[in-house]
Structure formats: C-alpha cells, structure tokens
Image (cartoon, rainbow, N blue to C red; front, top):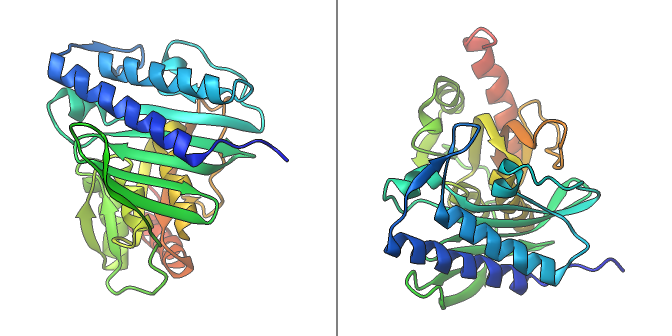
Length: 281
C-alpha cells in the first residue's frame, strides 16, 4: 500500500510555520520584490523552510512544490505524488499589517489534492481534510495551541436561495465576478486567502468564483479540504481542476469552488450567462 502522511503531522507543520510567521511579525521585517513582481518577506521564507524540512523528514521520496522554492528556481519533477505548499498565502496583506493570511499544505496524488491543511495564524482558525473526512478547530493565535478541539465539517448539500457566494475583497469586485453574482442573483460575502474554500467546506457559503490566474499552491490545500467535506472545484469550462502543470508554471486560469452538484450546475450556467452579457470577454 502506498505510504501517506498522517494528517496530524501536516497539521503540526502548519502550526509550527504559523508560530514562526508570528515571531517574524513581532520582531519586525522588511519586504523584498521577487522577479515576477510579487513581494516576499522573511516570514514567507522561514515558514517554507520549516515546512520543507519537516516534509523531507516525513517523506523524503515525495517532492515539494513550494511558492518560494519555485521563485528561486528549485522546481523538482512532480511525478504522481507531490506536496504543494504556500507558506504564507496573503503576503501583501500581511506585509501591510493585516491579519488575513494563511499557511497552506497539501498532498497531491494523481493530479488531485487528497490531504490538506489551512491555518490562519492571526485568527487561530484551523482546517484539515483527508479523504472523506474534513474537520475544523480553533487555536490560540499567540501560541498556536489548539483551544477548541477538532470537529467534523460538511459542505451544504441543499439548494440555497439565494446562493451564498464568497470572494476576496479585491478579486471579488471585478467585472466578471460581479457578472457571475448577478447572473445567480446571489448574496456576496467576503473572506481572505484560502479561508474562502473553508467557508464552503463548513457550510457557510455555496460558491467561490475566481476568474483571474492563481498558482496551484494557492488552491491545493483548500481544494483537499473542500473535497473531503463533500464539495469540489472545477475549471471555468466545467472540467476537473488537475494539479501538477509544470509546463504551465503551475498556474490555474480560473475556477469555481462549489458546495454541491446543484451549486455546480448553477455556476456553469452563470459563467455562460455572464460571459454572454460581457460579449465573451
């Protein structure tokens, strides 16, 4: 039988990375600009170093695709199984003093995320998923110690009217997202970074549209948790979202996360409708 990590081990690494991020924030830091124009901080680098070392110890035969490693040109061959890591999702907001950022760790198998952890160090929100089981807990933001034990979470299985649509403060206000929400006559809400996937996984939202490009490490952990909770993610054309696109620089060119089949079907119609109203833009 193929070896898999214990989900608790991945959770422990996410919490350790969160502690390091908070330590860097408390000590103070400067930002740097990467070659792609995005910014990076010491917190990103130290958090990824902790995760990478921990994964290497747990499973030396499974490569890791990490945001900072890729930025440095360290891109291993993925194969059928690899870890997909964003040590600090929401760096720009973190650098500006905001609290909306997460640590994301996922295991991808045959193109699909199967294990995932999302931890928000500032709020203490902690989500984890493995095949058929998704759960959530709450940590003390100062110590990353669990203060509210894990409990199962499940995506909404009912048809909700109006559809509850979660998006970020920035991308959620673009023309395509507004058109999508309008086509569904949905109720928009906002959440940060990978927590948007978790809002669907815990039943607090039904859909999360993303029409711009994101990297695989931005979505993989949340995708694993959402799958475990009974929801899923599709590309904008309705096809499954597959991970490990090295040739495409690990970019995802838009997706829809959904809570159930009814939400998925409604989203497919809304994408077609909103595209038509924008003249195919």
